[in-house]
Length: 256
Length: 161
Ligand SMILES: [Zn+2]
Image (cartoon, rainbow over all chains, first blue to last red; front, side):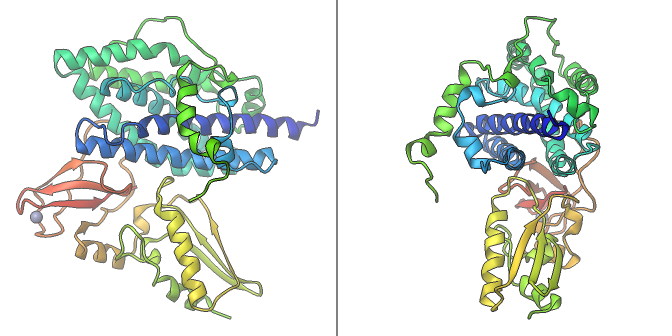
């Protein structure tokens, strides 16, 4: 096989993973619209959702270009089935209560922040440009969920318990974010993608810093589900897609 | 054929749909205007990745140029270098303040991402520095919600990015 082709194929898979992950967590957050605990927070959650869907659009349209089969960002978002989705399984988990949403968001955002920072020095110009744009937004998202976790974790007995329960429940989906596939090795060799070990180290440090302040205990190692990149998902993703894709499935090509 | 300066003049008449006192030029999203034998080439950059106003802005630029009788042009969007609020012109900042939105303070996001580091923002109505942030995220992606403790009025702050 020709090397450029192999790299291109690996890159398509990688960018699709980035796009799907942003899209699914963005969609999950959008479910809070009109249901936030207070008006300001309702607005914050949907603002963050909008940024993430914006980032997803950048990644998915680039993925479409890389694939070269004429699929647009919309085709990729609305016309793929569950098994074709590569998103991290953490991002598809249900919103649950506010503490659960904030913990899921924090675990993801700390990851995204360090990954995007690493991608600022990617040899791929396109990924670098997206990261440069996205990391500014992600910086604000990270501060927002960190503030909440500290306030809730170091808050009342009830709020502390909810935050601790949230991390205990979500922890088994976290390793999946760092789980690469075979093709990533090509991208790492070309310095297109960073080595995940470095990102993991920084993620661990951010978690420790914030969760110590929040008086929250990081769970001991448990069973880890790691299959998002391979398209094996928890039962929640199918329901999410059924709702998100409904319009394009029912009325193909519908526009407004 | 229109000159670069003419195009720039026309773009002064295209306004941000969410902050209708700011032209796209004031906002600093026009990165480049080139004119050659094939027509005009305009390069713009998005403010926020998910900002729904960006598509509207591009359509509005097209409509404006057509209205001015320009048919040969294209609009390209680039991401890098990433837009920052420092690119809003001084004129733009003045217009924002007049409109009741506190203009962004100098320079880009706080590097200190962790912990609470609200900046000191002056009330655009009474000028008081005794203000507090109510919500970092506001009515649009680019704004935060503040309240003035002196005149008691809430106001938007165009946040730094
Ligand atoms: Zn005031």
